[in-house]
Image 1 (cartoon, one colour):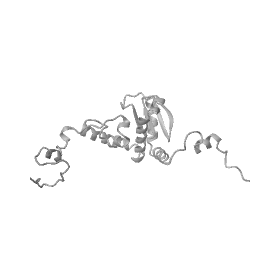
Image 2 (cartoon, helix red, strand yellow; image 1 turned 45 degrees about the vertical axis):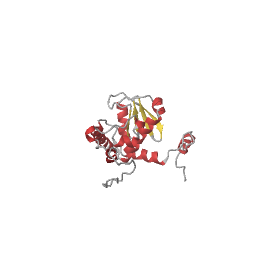
Image 3 (spheres, helix red, strand yellow; image 1 turned 90 degrees about the horizontal axis):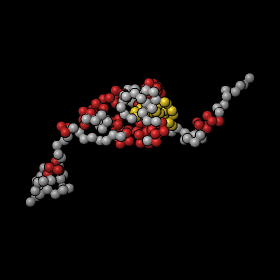
Image 4 (cartoon, one colour; image 1 turned 30 degrees about the horizontal axis):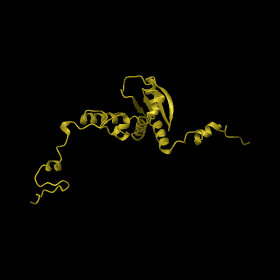
Length: 194
């Protein structure tokens, strides 16, 4: 006796899977990120953090979840990411309309996948400490924030601390010398002809 292997998926389920529900189907890169962050435990950690902060979880496309309305004081940022969960103090609609901030946090989700999940947390902490040592700001010289787009995340690039700045470059020092013509410096030590 041959039997049917089980119920067929509903039309809505087939349409959603095939992208016919009005949303495009998930692209390969977000699908890879989703799978990696589920397997490495970072998305589960993000769900726990969002829930502990009183955030309401909703899907946001490309396998991402948004935890809107986060109420804990730490971290003080308006939004942060743990796995595929983008956690924000803002409301869901407000956050998803902030296209640049949303994209910045989505890039952090990819970083979690590349760093092996929650292992990114100590790596991010080290990068933030190095950034603070270099310029007095936790985000400006942080490699994770730079790769996610400083401006998109609301960060600005800060100058190095004065003790760490390089001395004035040699061409700029030569500019005040007699016989120097801009654009002629080649790094050689020969004196200009008279």
